[in-house]
Image (cartoon, rainbow, N blue to C red):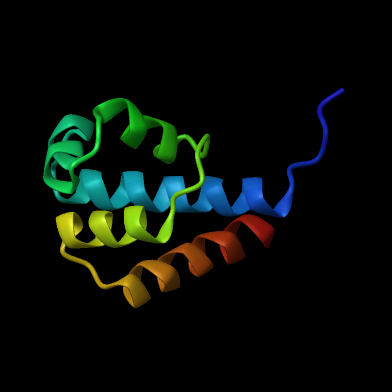
Length: 86
Protein backbone atom coordinates (compact mmCIF):
# COMPACT_ATOMS: atom_id res chain seq x y z
CA UNK A 1 0.00 0.00 0.00
CA UNK A 2 1.34 3.44 -0.96
CA UNK A 3 1.57 6.01 1.77
CA UNK A 4 0.06 9.46 1.40
CA UNK A 5 2.56 12.05 0.11
CA UNK A 6 3.96 14.43 2.71
CA UNK A 7 3.62 18.19 2.38
CA UNK A 8 7.30 18.38 1.39
CA UNK A 9 6.79 15.78 -1.34
CA UNK A 10 3.83 17.77 -2.66
CA UNK A 11 5.93 20.94 -2.73
CA UNK A 12 8.79 19.17 -4.51
CA UNK A 13 6.40 17.71 -7.09
CA UNK A 14 4.80 21.11 -7.75
CA UNK A 15 8.22 22.76 -8.04
CA UNK A 16 9.35 20.04 -10.44
CA UNK A 17 6.31 20.36 -12.68
CA UNK A 18 6.71 24.14 -12.87
CA UNK A 19 10.44 23.83 -13.55
CA UNK A 20 9.83 21.37 -16.40
CA UNK A 21 7.10 23.60 -17.91
CA UNK A 22 9.32 26.68 -17.77
CA UNK A 23 12.25 24.79 -19.29
CA UNK A 24 10.14 23.40 -22.13
CA UNK A 25 8.52 26.79 -22.80
CA UNK A 26 12.02 28.20 -23.28
CA UNK A 27 12.88 25.25 -25.53
CA UNK A 28 15.79 24.16 -23.35
CA UNK A 29 16.94 20.61 -22.75
CA UNK A 30 17.73 19.53 -19.22
CA UNK A 31 21.38 19.60 -20.21
CA UNK A 32 21.15 23.18 -21.51
CA UNK A 33 19.35 24.38 -18.38
CA UNK A 34 21.90 22.58 -16.24
CA UNK A 35 24.72 24.28 -18.12
CA UNK A 36 23.12 27.73 -17.74
CA UNK A 37 22.44 27.22 -14.02
CA UNK A 38 25.74 25.38 -13.36
CA UNK A 39 24.10 22.04 -12.46
CA UNK A 40 24.33 18.55 -13.89
CA UNK A 41 21.54 17.34 -16.18
CA UNK A 42 20.78 14.51 -13.76
CA UNK A 43 20.16 17.01 -10.95
CA UNK A 44 17.71 18.92 -13.17
CA UNK A 45 15.96 15.62 -13.87
CA UNK A 46 15.72 14.80 -10.15
CA UNK A 47 14.27 18.25 -9.43
CA UNK A 48 11.73 17.96 -12.24
CA UNK A 49 10.60 14.56 -10.96
CA UNK A 50 10.21 15.92 -7.42
CA UNK A 51 12.93 13.63 -6.10
CA UNK A 52 15.08 16.42 -4.62
CA UNK A 53 14.34 19.51 -2.54
CA UNK A 54 16.04 22.59 -4.00
CA UNK A 55 17.96 24.95 -1.75
CA UNK A 56 17.42 28.71 -2.00
CA UNK A 57 20.72 28.98 -3.86
CA UNK A 58 19.51 26.37 -6.34
CA UNK A 59 16.20 28.16 -6.84
CA UNK A 60 17.87 31.52 -7.46
CA UNK A 61 20.35 29.96 -9.91
CA UNK A 62 17.48 28.38 -11.83
CA UNK A 63 15.54 31.66 -11.79
CA UNK A 64 18.52 33.46 -13.34
CA UNK A 65 18.94 30.76 -15.98
CA UNK A 66 15.22 30.83 -16.82
CA UNK A 67 15.00 34.64 -16.67
CA UNK A 68 12.19 34.62 -14.12
CA UNK A 69 11.98 36.32 -10.74
CA UNK A 70 11.82 34.34 -7.54
CA UNK A 71 8.40 35.83 -6.78
CA UNK A 72 7.06 34.83 -10.21
CA UNK A 73 8.31 31.30 -9.68
CA UNK A 74 6.73 31.17 -6.22
CA UNK A 75 3.37 32.27 -7.66
CA UNK A 76 3.55 29.55 -10.33
CA UNK A 77 4.34 26.91 -7.71
CA UNK A 78 1.47 28.09 -5.50
CA UNK A 79 -0.89 27.93 -8.48
CA UNK A 80 0.31 24.39 -9.27
CA UNK A 81 -0.28 23.36 -5.64
CA UNK A 82 -3.77 24.86 -5.75
CA UNK A 83 -4.45 22.98 -8.99
CA UNK A 84 -3.29 19.69 -7.49
CA UNK A 85 -5.23 20.22 -4.26
CA UNK A 86 -8.47 21.21 -6.00
